[in-house]
Length: 272
Image 1 (spheres, helix red, strand yellow):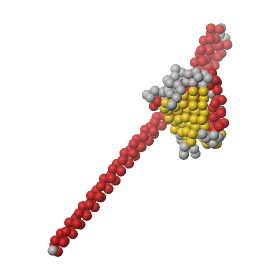
Image 2 (image 1 turned 30 degrees about the horizontal axis):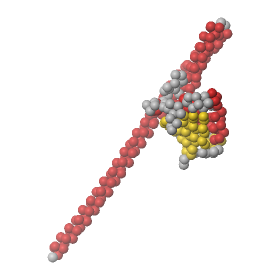
Image 3 (image 1 turned 180 degrees about the horizontal axis):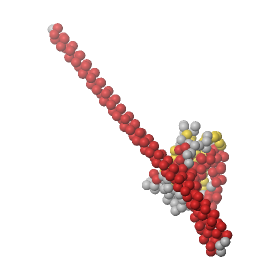
Image 4 (image 1 turned 135 degrees about the horizontal axis):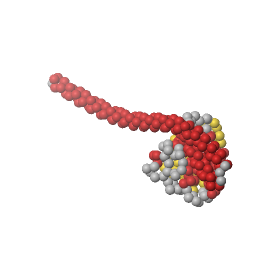
């Protein structure tokens, strides 16, 4: 009887040990799965950060090269402009017209040189407080000519009212003026452009969208890359400069096609 009782106790203990082992195995499997998922997430995050680092290194190299090229071009252009201006004074009407064409070409090249130098800058934004309402009003003033000439409907919805903005006012003015001008250039006569400003927990979000033709999906990943442009004129540095200015403010800019059917640019800037 005693031996039988010991055997039953042993069986019970064995069953308990087996159950404990099974439970521990299941917990280990769960932990392993959680750990695997976390490792996968960290791997993806690391890959993205490495890609971003490589992208910034690549852009920095392009910036240095651009600055070097711009300086090499600028001096000869200045000489050409001077000599053609002098030649124009001594020319007849046909010669003067030719000089004007050359000067126009020199002016276009100078604009590209200026864009190259602007893109190559090491941006360090100042931190100043300024009125959002006055800031928006100055943007509207700058686009008034194209707005009036094309009879564009500009709708502004500012949920922040006159909340104080922090950042480099000059740089941010350049950001939003560039996007607004692009939007107004993209629409037809009597077109529509919406400019909305909202706030979430940690950031201000500015969206500018138009009712133009929009941006094809295959082009969207390219538009912030230096020298990419779909325009017949231009350096292809406008939006890359905008992107650099936004990144200098620790923000981000994205592009999509909005509810109006055209392009929609969203700029998210941290509140502090």
